Image (cartoon, rainbow, N blue to C red; front, top):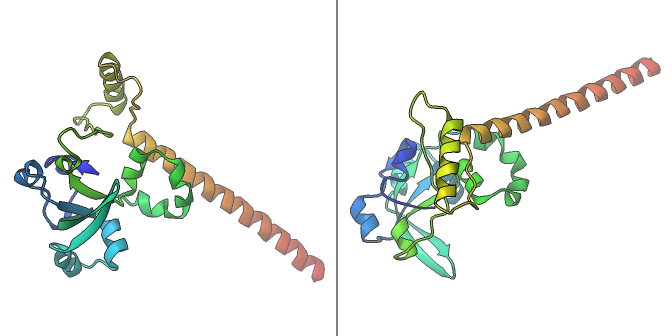
Length: 196
């Protein structure tokens, strides 16, 4: 994910080790990156506090378009979302989701936005509502502003609504599993009584 020096810090995510981008690194298009915890575990194995600190300064290879480049790890983000773990078993539908929905799964490599060239394409804009403001009001205001700017093909959505929808889906699977379990238990009980 391409981001600015403030892009990651805006989300209020705690760091497991290291730091976020410096403004000078973004402006100079330095080959640095920040990993999230899930990606760090996937790349380097078990992630203990001392392991995360040792990860800072290591090199990772990332493929952008047709070029493979080396990036220096300057930080590791602590993954605050348990939702990703709950949905891991349903990850087979990942390819059917839009790329911006994948952000919530926290398997990301953050790169300075200037690495994409002088005029990078922005695919995601994240807004944070002030305390007391409803997300639905912000979504409607963003839709209206984007429509007036001629960006009618963009989708505006609320993270809270997406999380609620994902948790509802998970609950439905759990309910279905419990129903199947009860039916099987009933059949097994009838068979045991019949044999007895």
